[in-house]
Amino acid sequence: MMKGGFIYVILFGLLLAPTPFLSQTCLDNFLAELELSNKLPKSKGLCYDEGAYWKFWKAGTKYSKSPSTRWKASYCYKQAARFGFKFAWFNLEYSKFLVEEGKLHDALKILKEVPASDALYNNGQLKIAEILIWSGAYGATNRVLSSIQVEEKSQIGESKKNLLRICDSLAAPVVKQEAFFNADNQPLALIGHSFVFRQGKSKALNYQIGFGNSYYLSNLSRVQTRINVQNSFSISPINTSINVGLGVVGFGTNDFKPTCLLGIRTQVNDNLVNELKIERKTYDLTRASIGSVLLMDQLMHSFRINKSSGLSIEWNGTYSKLANSQSSQLNLYSWVLSPYLMRTRIKPRIGGFLGYANSNQILYSAVLSYDQIIAGGDLNNIEGVFTSWFTPNQMRVVGLIADVGYSPNVSFKLNCTSTIGLGISKEPVLYLTNDEIGLSSYDTYFIPTDVKVNAMYYPSRSLELKVSYEFRNTVFNRAQYMLFSLSKRL
Image (cartoon, rainbow, N blue to C red; front, side, top):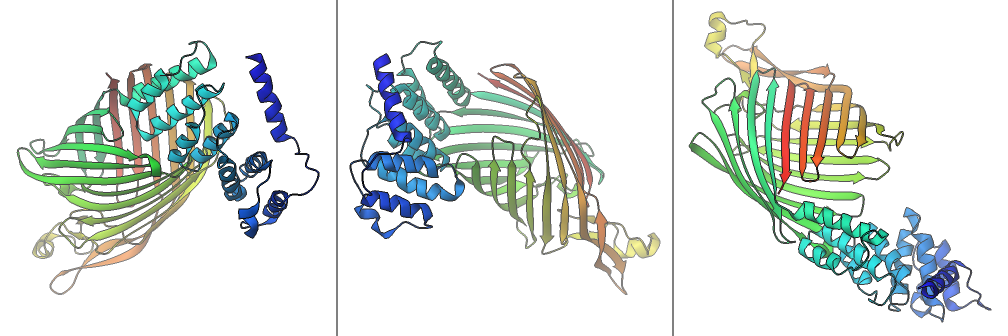
């Protein structure tokens, strides 16, 4: 064992040391030209010599450290890989690079080239298990990890136990019970609960079944009921998962209407996630949703960048259309959070946000009819309401974000996010003409604010308790939302 380890040290030192060739070869000239180029030199097909494997590996390692030269690293690593298996450290390094590039299927192929007789074989198997977990192949993950025979208290043994724990938590059946309360100043208030059963079986079967009720406090006899079933499956070669869902929503025992979901999520690389979602869903943010099912068709696209440093960036765009109508709206929103300002138990971040929203129709009308207003209403201040859904009119917002995370131990996590900004919107105003009620608008400024607090407690490995509170103030309403959630892994 000592002898084999000594050989690896010698080989790794040779890789890092300058290669002592007596004269410049075609490959040396090619790599020298590549150093200064922004595209591959023309002579790339002719440049191989007795040290090509090591030279390409060394160049790939150098170029992989900078985002601007990773395309050069990709080419150099690929050329080294063409020589077949020679040294396990290369396969581990190259697979890590491929994972960072989001090429999970290619990374698996490179790792599987490491023979079982190699001293680093188990390290490669651990990396394979990690990738299979990300791909949702839980059964294959367990088979790979079970094949690793090492002492439990060794470093590889501890890593194996941790991956088994993660795989078990993702694949085991989970039941979740939620209770929530939502109230705003329209006035609109509701309480509700939901129950979800979820289990991941394989790359093709990762399903959940949900059931829930909502009770509107202004009319407790009108109970909204929701039932839905979802399944997601992964396509490993393109690092993509597809989520399909069907459901129904209604009041009491009748007036049930169908809902559906199609979502496509791609893990572009370690840090970036791209998501597209098409959905028919319920809308319950206005008084018109009390006692009736309002359905909204929505197309949503988002991408998120989350780095271990704490840096987070998100862009979100949604196009929504009220079902069975011509009314639609566009919402664009983006925010950025800095890396952690300090890395202690308390992890603060700061950032900013931008937003824009607009509708093709303003669904705002008077509470009273024309005749009722003439008979006894306030002619100069006509009360209005958004009849079905809130339709923003050229609304623009910009502001600041403060985010603080606190985790005194592994069993408890607390996070608070606050935003405050400045917004401008064209607000609807009603007026009387000769024989009807007219609609106009005026520019109004407002201060959008939002405060979110999330607390999570893990009494055991299989139990999670979550409490959330949010206060939100917009140009439309002032609302509060509370959630209590209990999740149990069976």
